[in-house]
Each structure stands twice: as structure tokens, then as C-alpha cells.
Image (cartoon, rainbow, N blue to C red; front, side, top):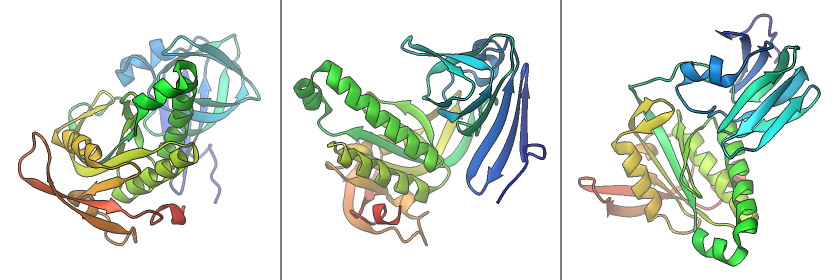
Length: 285
């Protein structure tokens, strides 16, 4: 399959930037041209409605250069001929008098578009956290733990990109992500679990499908509380899936086991949850 950027599937035009997007199966690839004088704060922030860019960008710079500033204050200039991986929580601006031209294959969907404020949609939520993170931090020390946590975060975001998940927020050592497909959320959780095990970590994860309100890069609603409670039920290494999410997995050939019914704090009634069997998703990666 091949497509030309001269005949894109989607075009995004903002002051001093133009983006042509082609869709290859489930992969979005863009050609972006940022003109001299462009900055995220001035030209995109009013549209995005967030303090910094919340997209995870991966790609190659073809010409020009851009300065990246992370939330923590770290700065880096990306030059022509360099590949880049820029996590969420950054500002960027073109440096010099030459247009900054890139090909990007992550962080493309939804970039430089208005937030879907107040829109209620049915989505699948994934929440993860590292088991025993406090004990690990004490045992490793601050510097080593910070490095472990950064590496885990990078690998989680790669899987979110792979399975089309939106990184909504981080919860210290965990993530809340939104998916438009329940099977992708489960496969993503399995992949995160597998990579964490290779790093000597254990995670717990909860998955729930329901209606949420999307607002300025965040999500709200009872479904968010439900997925948090389900994740808290999970044992080390477990991925627990709510009954509503399981109902959307028909035909996915994922292997799930009944994990029983539970009362979720603050939510009415008892909720049945299911356990993803070890290997049922990882073996199909």
C-alpha cells in the first residue's frame, strides 16, 4: 500500500503550519511544514486548550530545526536529518529562518484540532499502575527509580500509540488511557504487562467500557471512577475487564476467566469482572 501526501486523506491548516495526513490501514502518517516564527504556545495552544502539547510525537526531521521544551524544563533542538521521539507535555517552536519539515507516524491523530469539549462518547478506558512502587522507590533510591519510571513510561506510550490509545493522564506510576475499541485496550494492557515483566516490574490493570465526557484533553464520568475501582481490585500481574467491556469483545478470541462479582466503592450494585488469561493476548502480538 502506498499513498501520496499530495493527495492526502486529511488536511490540517493552522497559522504558519500545514499538515497532510495519509492513512495506511490503522496507521496515520503526516507531512508537516512549520514556517519560521511558528510556536505551539502562540499558534496551537488557543486551539488545543491545554497548557502544553499532550501528543506523543515520533518521526524524522527533513529540514529546518525546532526547539522542544519539556514540562520539567529540559530543552533540546531537533535538527534536519534526525529522528525524534517527543513524549506528551512539551512546548515547541521553530528556530531560524528555514521551514521545519517533518514526516511523523505517531502523535498525528487529533493534533492542532479543537478539543471535543463536552462531547459524550462511548469509549473503553484502561488504567494501569506499578505494583509495590513505593517499596521499589525506597529500595532503588530516587535517581535509579526515576530512570526505571521514565523507561516504563516510554514503553507504555509506545504501546498506546501502537494500539491507538489516547494518553489521558498519568497517575504517578500509572496511566489512564482512552480507546475507541475494547479489543485494542485489552491487547495494549497485555503488551504493557509483558514489557513490564521484562523490566522486572509488575503492573495491575483495569479495563471498562462506558460513556465518558471528553473535555480539553481529559475525560470525566462514572466510567472513570469504575475503571479506577476495577484496577484497584487487580492482583499483581492481573488485567481485569468489566462486563460491559467484555460484551464488546465478541469475536476477538481473547481468553477471559470469570473473576467474580464485586461492590465497587461509591457505585451502585455489584459488578462482574473478568480476568485476562496469561498468554491469551501476548502470544498473538
